[in-house]
Image 1 (cartoon, each protein chain N blue to C red):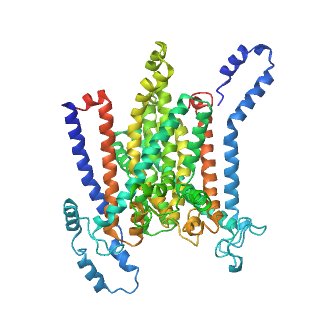
Image 2 (cartoon, each protein chain N blue to C red):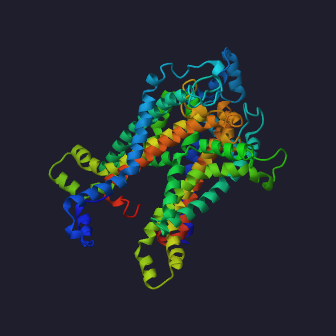
Image 3 (cartoon, rainbow over the protein chains, first blue to last red):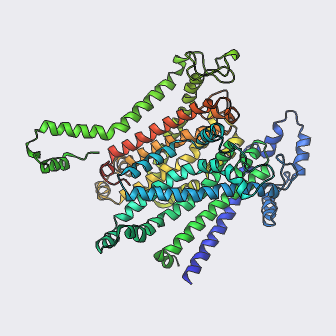
Amino acid sequence: MLQTRYLLGRLRQSALLTVLVTVVVFGLLHLLPGGPLQALLGEQAGVDPASIRRAEELIGFHKPLHERYVEWVLGLARGDFGTSWTVAAGRPVGGILATHIVNTLLLTGISTLISLAAGLALGFAAAVWQHRWVDHLATLLAVAGSCVPAFWFGLMLIVLFAVNAGWFPAGDAYPVGKTGLRDRVPYLVLPVITLSLASIASWSRYARSSLLETLHQDYVRTARAKGLAGRRVIFGHAVPNALMPLITIVGLDIPHLLAGATVTETVFTYPGMGRLFLTSLQMYDWPIVQTIALLLGVSVVLANLGAEVCYALVTPQLRSEAA
Amino acid sequence: MVTPGVREGAAAALLPGGGIWPGSTLRQRRRDAKWRDHRPGLAAAVLLLVIVVLCIAAPVIAPGGFTAGALEDALQGSSLQHPLGTDALGRDTLVRLLYAGRVSLFVAGVVSVLTTAVGLAVGLLAGYRRGVFEAVSMRVVDAFLAIPRLPLYLVLLRLLGPGMGTLILVLSVFEWTTVARLAHSGALAESGRLYVTAAEALGASPRRVVWRHLFPNILPPVIVAFTLAVRGLIIAEASLSFLGFGILPPVPTWGNMLQGVQSQLWSRPWVAFYPGTAIFLTALAVNVLGDAVRDALDPRSGTGGPKR
């Protein structure tokens, strides 16, 4: 009962935040000097004002800002994300985006899972065997991983494993005409490693300090004192508690992972949302830019909501307090 | 980090024959231990110094500038004349690396100093004065920290135009938030302490409390945050310039030297190696130096105790 009320409150908050996101995205893309259309047409020298006005009327830019905002939001509500200007002129944005989103979700989804598994394993091992070689190795990896620029790491992976060894393809998401999951695997290996590096480095640090903190708690000492085996103390008592603060950290990091995929996708010419975002920006395809920016904003809201709900579900105190 | 002599002395006295060790030897051992603890930090400092000095001295080392080169020298491997080879226009890679370093380090340096100063001021004020300013500024910080920065920077750089000036502006507007949050929580924790109450009771003005009492006490974590900011900004500048949205050629930066390099990976894979190595080594040196400074300033996070 209490839980339902808490969840409803969170949902309402997220809905409000989503509205805020649409306002911010729209404002950012339309209020800045020049505006998208001038920028697009201004690149071709000698365009006369009359044709700029004609183009404006064609895409509805002659209307006042608030009307355009309302039209955009109403369109979103109908599932209409607008029409592409330049990247695939005239085609609906939703259709163009669909395949790119699938590719990106696959990349970031697998990368999140692998980062979680590797980061937690590494961090927890470093905490259990503190000051031993695992710990030093974990520190080394974390420091190196946070100092390597992702794009360069990707380039080096291409040189080593695509150019020299020839084990994996250097780019694209799947062989021509084959989009099955099995066909994609070799194409995913290097991008997933590239994208995961930074999150493994940072999550392993959080996992390590979280477990170390837990291991110093009284209840762990009690469990030890009553004679529980070391493994049972760690997995039965310490690890579940050490996982709790990590929920928030990992949850809030996922939108950043999604956005960071832009760099990885560029290095590997992977046809994902990030690279589409980049291409659309370069070609001033504002409807696509706006839609992807909105999706990223919504992912932030959803990640916050998800992290809070998960946290509430595992924390009994918070459940009753929040209600 | 070795904490003040008491612990050392006590430990030494417990050692077999500890009592009869001459004082000078003990002091010597303590110095040795200190030196050992700081070795990575010192190495990092030296490495960073070498990189910075080489980059600053680029016009002295290569007075020809970063555009000097002849087409007939294009695409060479390493030689005595061109230690790291030449690019497709015959320009020396090492020379361009040095000039690129000037730009990359300048951007990272300016932005990190600016944002740390702003973040400190906002965080301290918010944490000490509380009230509306705290509520507003910390909501802004929360929002800025939640937004994925990369797409935001890309959009802003596209709208405002690429270049060093815009890059510094865009990065500065958003990057102060990390330090602000840190300074805020630090100031919040410290202003509850007795020494602050005492200073206030003695009639110290708010400005005096903030700058003479709170500021020095929250400095250690802020210094670490500063080094992390430098590291992050070097990588951010490189990534944005690599994507073609930061600083554009012909001005070289470590990031834009790698722009479009994918097509050359088959014929001349080493071209991708050097700029990234420069970024990595610089970031690593900054990172290790920051850790060393933290260890030196914070007695609790020594190599002996648990690292948090």
